[in-house]
Length: 108
Figure (cartoon, rainbow, N blue to C red):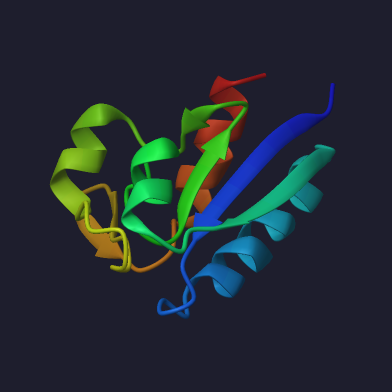
C-alpha cells in the first residue's frame, strides 16, 4: 500500500529539504512506497487552511508525524517559523529517524 506523505513548509525555514531526505531514507530502509507532496505555505490564511504547525509539518496519510503530547512539547504555531520536533525529550529541527520509522509503522 502506497503511503501519502505531505510536507508543508515555508521558504524562510531551510530545514525542510533535510526532512524530505530523511523521510526518503527511512522509506527506503523500511521498503515502503510513498507519494511525497511538498506544499509551500505562503500566508497566514494558508497556514490556517492546512492547520500548519511550523516548517516542516509532516503528515502521513493525513495524520501529523507527532502525537498531540509531542507537538505541544516541541513546536510553535507561527506560519513563518521553523518547527521543532520532540523525540524522547530531545528537541530536533527535523524529525529523528526513529520518530519517522515509528510513525510509518503505526500507520501500516
